[in-house]
Length: 229
Length: 229
DNA sequence: TTGTTTACAGAACAATCGTTCAGTAATAAT
DNA sequence: ATTATTACTGAACGATTGTTCTGTAAACAA
Image (cartoon, rainbow over all chains, first blue to last red; front, side, top):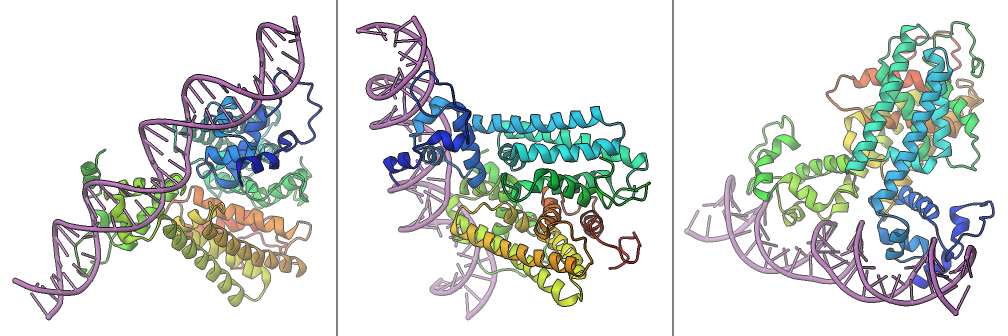
């Protein structure tokens, strides 16, 4: 596929980047991609092929542009990764802040953050997917991994607290339980796709039932899932 | 780090590749790495940095060799990936064959394959880790993804059968349940390390309790985990 | 000593990597 | 018509990519 063919293939760039865009109110200069659209498509491609396996030439071809045109919208390849990772991490951190602020008990906060994480993951799927694949190959990636570790530690503390309160069984290591629960949650990036047959709310219910169903001490004896939240 | 320094750092290659090697009985030619050792270290490095982010020069430096020396042991970079992926897939497929051959009911087979998958994952951690990160960027990767899909479908059929038999709750989609369960299992590659504090057997117990604990219909009413297996 | 076997180095290859720069093109506001 | 503003092209850059070729080095067997 030569440049002209690629151009034709991406003849309507806005539709790909902004599905059902709310009638953009006539921007100033020459029509074309803007920064946000380029970012969106870039992150999608990074997820399809992997960040390292995606060249700037690949991205330019996908957009129907030359490589140099890309650098009008974006400072570098890695800067695209940086903002996407920050987006994902900010979402997760806010959800955790919410969970501990709103709920009274550690178990309730835990249920809340599992729901919240599923919500962030489905809402910001491309960014979170990118985050979960980071290996620490650059300073930016290492910083993101550090924020992820801090998040995990806070959740682990919640699990431990719920165990101490007697709301969660105590014969499983809190760190192991946390990793298994979020392993299940994070695995959603591998197959969940928005607009598919699976509803995000229903999905959060299922995840909670599988991940916490075998750990709760159910003082009320009830096996119903949605009962307490 | 120049070539000489790298050489010194990897002065005892055999110890890194073959921990506690059973007194290799004096091979023929010039001493040095053999194919298996190179493969082992290569897969380790692929896991550390990601396959695409690891250059042949990186691997050569890690081994304390030149790039050209590498091609004496291995046909290509991708061939290393190919044998590792085949190794992981063969292990998983055998575990599944075992599970359906040995057990009588679908639920028992399901428990068996979850245990088996944890076993293969911990025993062949580097190869399975590599498998789970494949994105389908080449013919070899796409073939591996195809074998993985076939594996998933067979397990999903087990879940559906256990639901039909009344051993598993029916109000959750079999495909979703399978993906969540194996999402939890596969997430072990992110943190489990052999020789660490966590025992593989205990780990399999924990995974089974979390992943299936909330789904079983427990006809005997018992909540004990290791009871039936 | 003469082969055989295994393991390595050095130099070079075309291709691709991410990035820069100087100029051009197309719109809206004035 | 002029000016801003925004979007893009084409050519080139040094560096790195995976791979090949030709020759050498070090062990064991005959």
